[in-house]
Image: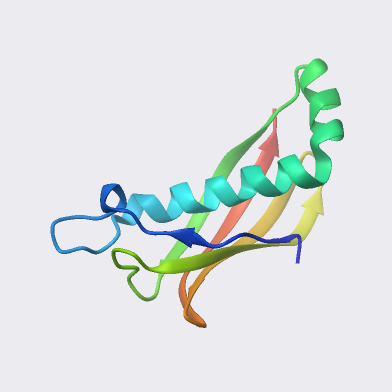
Length: 112
């Protein structure tokens, strides 16, 4: 496990009229957790890469929406490194609320 983030909360801005989280917000939550993890774990290494003009970008995402998050839910986002490759990294991210898996994604980050 690379990162098991702080708890996040679902706000009104994250939901539709039914109080359920918009599908795209799950990706925002994952991005926020990746940013927090990268900043806390490898900030100096990232700064060196950026000085050389190198960046990691999302190359692909396979997402599974399993259970909906609702207004005011408290949840965590975890990140696991599945496989590092030359020039890319495969990650798995999971969103868990009340010990129930709500969302999972396989994400490939590519270096450009």
